[in-house]
Length: 304
Ligand code: SF4
Image (cartoon, rainbow, N blue to C red; front, side, top):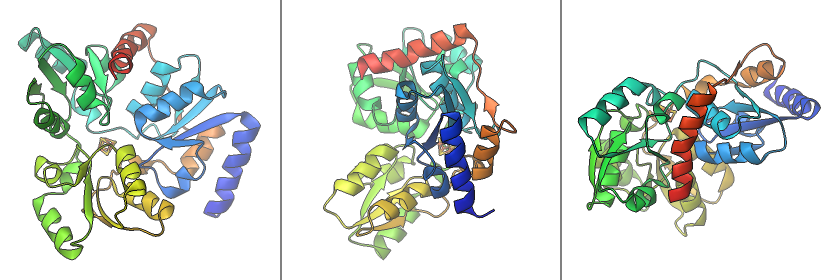
């Protein structure tokens, strides 16, 4: 079956079964095309809570499907490919965070949204890459324990020198694939291009960027900027989506190695088979876990 035919089958099943499909921005173009909503992990959770459909299929990684379930417990939420996990989210567990809280008493524990539901149960506040600076600034406590992304954490430390931010080890294996040499090489090749980087990148990249922001922020910046050429310092799919959406602009990868293989595990066949009940995993969370994790997300909404 051709890609187009499979997409049409999925669209027909979606209507017949009244299913909402959510796709993270790092998904391939062919999956984005069949999705009802595309965006970052928190944006997708909010969309899921507003959508009238009772069944939601998430094309992304596990913590994203968990976040959808945390905010929409009444809905049936599926992860289309159960193998798709986020290596960064899996670097910390509840025990590691609990031990760090004992080591740093009196600190406010802030976790990135890229964490499991279990980890969120032992954190005080959750942040996204776009809301992190604002939220941490508004936390009255100057002592912050941040996890699990050291690069995002060190970006926050530079932005908020008034805060004492202790970082737990961890990071995104995709974003650390680009370094100073990549910046020098691509800048030399495209001297007029602006470098847009994700805060999960190494500090040696983020410090040289013209703009540092979330994937949504990078997309918005490129779309609305008067600039015509951009070096994209985040997962490669964003470059492909931007090429599609801004045909009059030019986009260059900071590194062609910035591919998240976990995000690319999900295929159109996974989505189709999830809809027919042959594959996919329904996300189930203990109600106590869900409520505690939701408290952490509620704090983010309150402070943000
Ligand atoms: S890009 Fe990094 S943070 Fe995002 S899902 Fe892949 S490994 Fe996780």
